Length: 383
Image 1: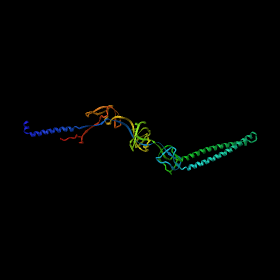
Image 2: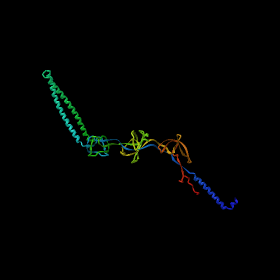
Image 3: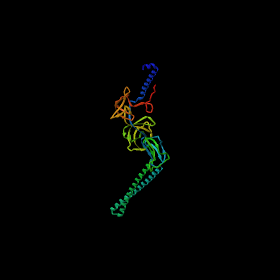
Image 4: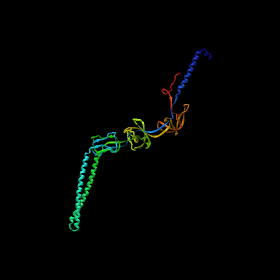
């Protein structure tokens, strides 16, 4: 063998180079065959974590009143417009009161006639009383007949009864006149409360008919306190309780947060496209007037909250046999299983009450760096 090598030194060198190249290629093949492992990790962070129920809602004034007309007629004057601020007792509108005025004048005339009849009957009653007293004296002296005495007595009783009838008719007519005067007063419509005119339902010249339903002229609302009415699905409504914190922002300004507490959940649902929704309401101060009727609100009902708490992504926590565990990277970058005490989660992050420190890196999953080669590891070349 040695003699052969001496005779063919170039061939021997070539064979040695080929063997070396095969060894290098085999080593690099082995490295390429083993996948490169990378850990998907996240850092343990400290901050506020909330579990919330979200819902869309609409802002409306909490307190308002619809102002209507109590008498029929033509709306002759309208003294306010939408957006005007009004005080309680302020004149808002006037209705043509010619019919009501005529009724009042006719009633006063009839009342005057009845009172005149009453005066006449009272005079007749006085005469009948004197005649009856005279007949009493004559009968005591046996100077009159029984028929004459009975006639005087009957006349006195009839006059007394007629006066009672007239007095009742006068009271009845007086009540009727007072009703007509009230209707005349209803032709001038005053603000029942202070607030802002938020809508007008009638215009000057319009004829109002109050005989069937009360015509609504306008709505006056107190805009200092607004109510947010939200619709919550039946899957989440059991998580809501009166008094729980809630906050919202409007679609027009999502940078401003408004805080409140849940006032009530209405017991009667509303079914929309076969989805059962419950109305949850809460109030918010609006002293600056930035919130307007009809605005859309994105509401967040806070079910649970942890302030300045440690938390990790939900994917980092594994729960087995009633115990929560996470994998934490050690100094060498190797994952180590560690038991922790986990709190609530909001489907994004889980609160960690014990077992981790701020800044620890937890493993979310394992990633293998492979090219798309039909599932086979990428092979490297010889060099």
